[in-house]
Length: 159
Image 1 (cartoon, rainbow, N blue to C red):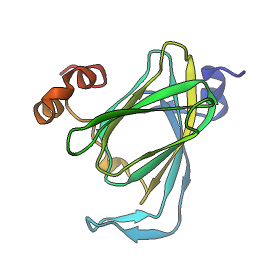
Image 2 (image 1 turned 90 degrees about the vertical axis):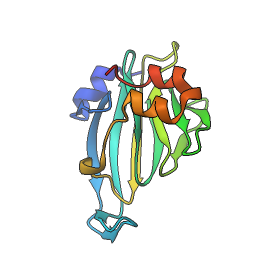
Image 3 (image 1 turned 120 degrees about the vertical axis):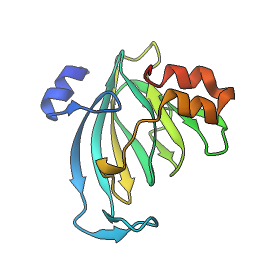
Image 4 (image 1 turned 90 degrees about the horizontal axis):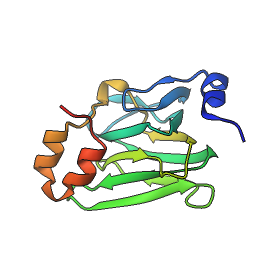
């Protein structure tokens, strides 16, 4: 089995602002107007890698996202719905091979103790643009969902 450094080098990945490493591998030439009125590619896709000690910190997208398992072990994707319900989905070879992240859900990911890394593909439709990306502040998310304080504190950066 290959290692995280192998994939980071082979795929020419760079650090992602939410944590982990990534490389954009597809951006559709076709465009669509989002419900908010922004012009976006119909879809984008990246390679995304988390290794032991990395986290994908809580964030929210204005589009649906699908994670596809490629290599490594497994990761837990943590969700808080717009109504405040918490749940977790595990992605990996012995679990879900893909996980759908609905628009508007807050989500982040980390590795269980048994995993050294995971490599996934992430497809967003309509396409992802960094101008729409914002990590959620710990204070803001805790104020909005006080019953989820423990998971929020574990998947956000201290302020």
